[in-house]
Amino acid sequence: MKKNKGSSIISIILIILILILIVFLGYEILYVDIFDLMKENNETIFTSIDTQNKVVNTDNSNSVNQNNLNIEKIEPIIDNSENNSNNSVNENLNNYISTTYKYFYNQLDQYGKTIYNAFEQNKENMKSGVYKIDFGTEFSSLLNTSNGEETLNRAFQSAWNAYTYDNMDVFYIDVERLTLMTQTTTIAGISTHEVYISNGNNDNYLIQNMQSKENINQKLNLLEAMRKEIYTQLQGYSKYEQIKEVHNWLIDNIVYDTDMTAQNQYSIVGALVEGQAVCEGYARSFKYILDGLGIPCVLVSGTGTNSNGETESHAWNYVQLDGKWYGVDVTWDDPVIIGSGSLDDENRYKYFLKGKSTFQSSHIEDGNITSNSIKFTFPTLET
Picture 1 (cartoon, one colour):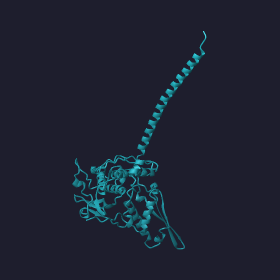
Picture 2 (cartoon, one colour):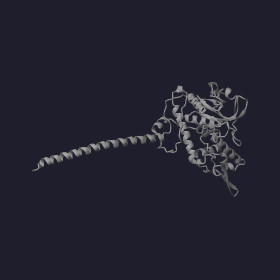
Picture 3 (cartoon, helix red, strand yellow):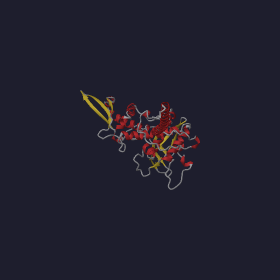
Picture 4 (tube, helix red, strand yellow):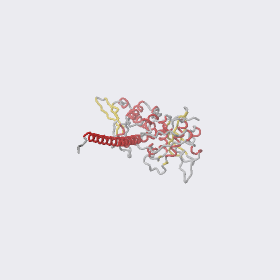
């Protein structure tokens, strides 16, 4: 029987078209599934990166009337590069300026200011613990006078006191390991003196539990993240409300170190990172946060006489509000309560923004921060 060639060709063409259609449809299904899967994975990756790089919580849901800061645990930011920032965070921090209120600097003489400026300019370098601040022959003329050495030593001690009372974030240097050195060369009866500050015969001038720049930066990044978080949450609050919120937050989040065993009890690390401090840690933390809010605040030292009539060395703050100065003692507004119970408003704000007649009846200033230093003065409180 003779085959019909035309029918055979048509059949083959139909089969080929059907196969092409099947392949095409299979490709479309496979392509769409793979593309959607890739799209989902990319979105997940980017979300994960944003979360890891977020410096602060940008939730501004707090209303002024809530009267409660809600600062969650913030992990240290290891990468401190400028490109590692989140745009939404930057928008909330457009007006954020970390300003140190340098009250004590202005009380130094010309030699003290020179040394203070050197500390400030070499803040980053000094994290190594061995960096030498070299003044060259800048103090040579002074040292050639009869009491030049005494004057320079006094300027050095005064500059350090002012620097650490102005800058709460310099918690990693052990001043007892920081040495002022003088090298004298005498030719034909004329002496030239080169002065520098270094670690001397010590391994370094860092405190024992902060022995690396990486560790220091980790703590500083965490503290700055906390300060920015507070700044973000308190936008829209009045200055009075901001001061009050910080006061209350510190009371709620710091435990007084009654056993005196905490390693960093005198610094912002002990108070803000580890949650345990004594009066100086409370007061330094209060100033550190208010510096970030642009509110003038001063660390004050002296003696305090408590309700039991006991007098002891103490630290607190003076805060400027509407051009006037008031006393704040966060530590004494956070008394150790034996057993259960909570503070009523009378005790919680007993030492909050008080004037001279009230506050200085129990708090006596002492501008003699250390021996061999100038006597510093503090702001005058409103009556």
